[in-house]
Length: 352
Picture 1 (spheres, helix red, strand yellow):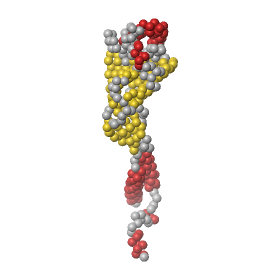
Picture 2: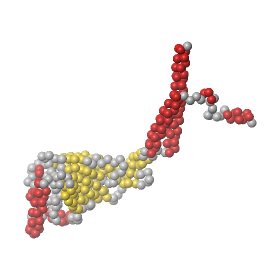
Picture 3: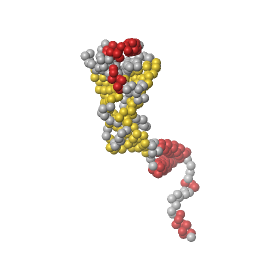
Picture 4: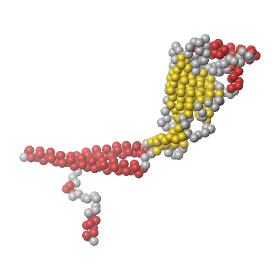
């Protein structure tokens, strides 16, 4: 029995040192405190690394069909007013896609805010139903020559609205356009312009196309809900014109995206890249300046998954960090003890 116990003692990985070998020293205390600080720091670092959510990107072919493409817009035109009448829209939002669908002055949850030159809101307008057929009555001035009754019955209102627009331009009013457009999931464009006016009416307001200042600030432009870490490259973009005018065109490549949370929830949305182009107008141009957003969809869908480090991996790293720190500080303590002991011995010999 005694032999078995003696053999078992040899398997003890934690031998007990004799009492005279376990002296407590000030240098050992300093090293112990330093080791505890290092352990605590590394533990916090490892814990933060474990709690951090990483994202993994995957790509595949987009097979979605028949879904709408939501376009969130929030823009300010500091040099164009919002005024409109019952049959006249000064600043309009139009959309055209490759399916042939053309919507003029869209009413899909779009709001306009009248802005004072100092920036505060003077009033708002929700774009109520405006059927494309009604709009065509005063589009491009084509029907005004043959619709004398329309002009006769509305001439007073027309003069009133034109005068209001002139007053707003003189007072340097601006307009903020924001809301959501639900368009078909095909390539197309939407633009903000004065295309709701006929050429005849527009010429009563402006003497030249160079007087139309389409300076704008894009507060937000996105193609779906936002997910953590998304970057919309046009957010915060400001394009201010001085003593010139022209048309802005933004060419956008929309990339369908799915964001998968760790909870299993899936958020369908889109991200995009963009290039822009500006064309100056000339006095003899017949087209009015505008801001165009021409978008196309990528055939590839990006899936972003949230992932977190495995708990057993966290425990493994934690044991390695704490054990390694303990071993290193133990060696440091022995070296310091021997160094101090050598210094004391040398001093003692010199005194003798």
